[in-house]
Amino acid sequence: MQSDQFIETTHLLFGDLLKTFDEGEEYTLYNFGPQVISRIGFATNITPDIVRQAADKKVDLIITHHDAWDFIFGMKEECHGLLKHFQIGHYFVHLPLDYADFGTCNSLFELLKVNQIIQTSYHDEGRSVPGVGVFNDSLTFEELCERVTDVLNEDVKSWKHTEKRISKLGIITGAGNSTKNILDAVKLGCDAYLTGEKTLYTVQYAQYVGMNLIVGSHTFTEIFGVRSLVEQIKKKFNHIETIELFEDHFE
Image (cartoon, rainbow, N blue to C red; front, top):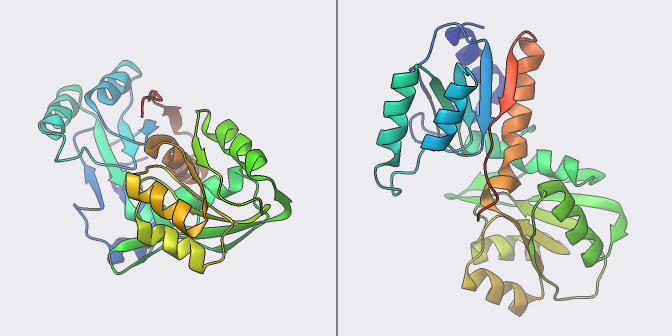
């Protein structure tokens, strides 16, 4: 796969979502690697360790959900120095991947075996609105927590506020920790809300409004969207090798 074929493919996959969000802020290809891409490594985050793993595995291009955060001071510069040194490209795609049909939210719904996605997560006035999925056979809160734990392969935090069985689940992957996100879930009639980060206010508001709350990690509520993107690319270029790069469950 040529580098320009990769860019063309991302435009086909994301369509108007790339027009909605700014290149550079929400998606970019850092073209430090070879023009011919044979092996892709993927992860939720880009870190110096991820770049070194990719170099060890002879990766040509790293695909992540997040760019290196500017407020983790110095890390983006170190990542770019390593990418240039090892001649590896890096493509990140943030909000377009959150809202794509195959993206972070819907891929997690699929793994949790919801029977119908009645609302895909979307962007409204600078924030994410939850996706909503429905289970035909309702679950107890404990059963849902166990299912989330198995899918994420990590311990989750949970707060049970009603005895009602769970039929309608709201999800914002990653940092869906705003009280407005929980209010959205309430207005949408969700029986439980799942996200990847919390604050004191998240927990207090969920308790106040009686919303069952499950919180995994930012990284592992979002990795499935990156994996799904890589699978979409591999469908078009089946000779490409793909490798999931290791990230620890440290959150």
